[in-house]
Amino acid sequence: MQTSLRVIRAIIVATLVVAPNAVRAQEKSLPQQIADVMVQLAGGIHPGLRFTHTKGLVTTGTFTPAPEAKSLSRAAHLQGAAVPVTVRFSDGSGIPNIPDNNPNASPHGMAMRFALPGGAYTDIVANSHNGFYVGNGDEFLAFLKAIAATTATSPHPSPIEAFLGAHPRALKVVLDSKAASKSFANLDFYGNNAFILVDAAGAKHPFRYQIIPVAGVEKLDSATAAKQMPSYMFDDLRKQIAKGPVRYTLYAQLANPGDQTNDGSVVWPSDRKRVELGTISVTKVAPNSDALQKALAFNPIILTNGITLSDDPFPILRSAVYALSVAHRR
Image: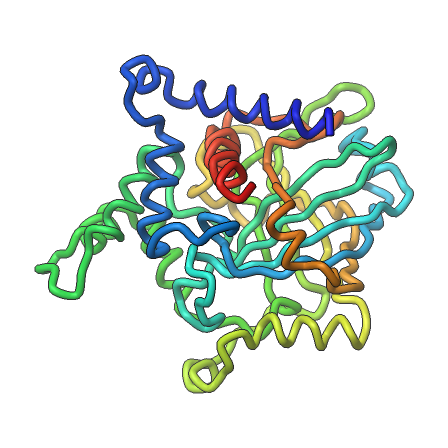
C-alpha cells in the first residue's frame, strides 16, 4: 500500500508538471483536457471503467528472460530467473461494448506488469501499431478534438480529415487499423515510447519495446472480419489459453546514434539492432478479471533499477491521464 501511495503521489506531481502554466492560470491541465475529450468520445462516464481501452481481459503467466538480456540492463527481471506477469489485453476506445472488428477498436492494447523481488513491480504499456498517431500532448489533444468535432454532416474536409491531411503519420495509423486481427495470439504490440536500458557498468541504451507473437502475425480479410462475433478476439484468447500457453517474444529495438527518441510517431528503421529480452507465456485467464480491471493501474513510468525514462514526453503525459482515470475508477 505504501508503494502504491508513493506512485500515486508521483503521478499527481507529474500531472502538474505537464502543464504548469495552465495550472497557475487556474485552467484545466493538458492531461485533464485529454481525459475530458476521451470521456466525450466514449459517450460519457462509464462508472468504474477506464476512460480508454475500456474493454479488456486480465490474464497471468510468466516472463523468462533471454540470456542476452542482462548484458543490456541490470533490471531484476532480466537477470535469469522467470518472474510472474499480469497481462491485460484490450480494445482501443472508451466504449465498453465496442466490437473487436470495429476499426476504432484498433490499435488494441497490451499492458503488462512484471512482479519483482520484495513485492516491487515494473510495467510496460504497448499497443498494436508500430508508431503512435502523434508525438506530443498538444497534437494528441488536437487529434481527439478533431474526432469529437466531426459528425456525419460535417462538410469536407471535416475536422478529422483536415487533421489527418496535415499529419500523415496519424493517417497511417488510421488506415492500418482498418484490417481486423485474427486473434490476440496473432497480434504484435509495440511500446512506441523510447526508454533507456542501463547495464551493470552504467552504460545507457535507448530502446523501444517490441512484443511479437510466437504464432505469427495474422490479419483477416474484410469479408471474414465482417462475420465475426463482437468479442471474437477475447473468446479466441480464452480458447487458446485453454489449449496451452500463448507466447510472445519481448524485444528491445535499439536506437542508432541520431535516431529520434522524443517522438513516438517516428518509427525507427527496421534495420536497427533488435535484442531478445525474453519470452512472455500467458497461461491463465484471471478468474476475477472484471474486479482486477477496476483495481489494476498499469503505468508507463513505473520503472525499476536498470530502466529509465528517455527524453520522450509521452510517458509522463500518459501517466498523468491514467492517474485521472484511476481516480475516477476508484
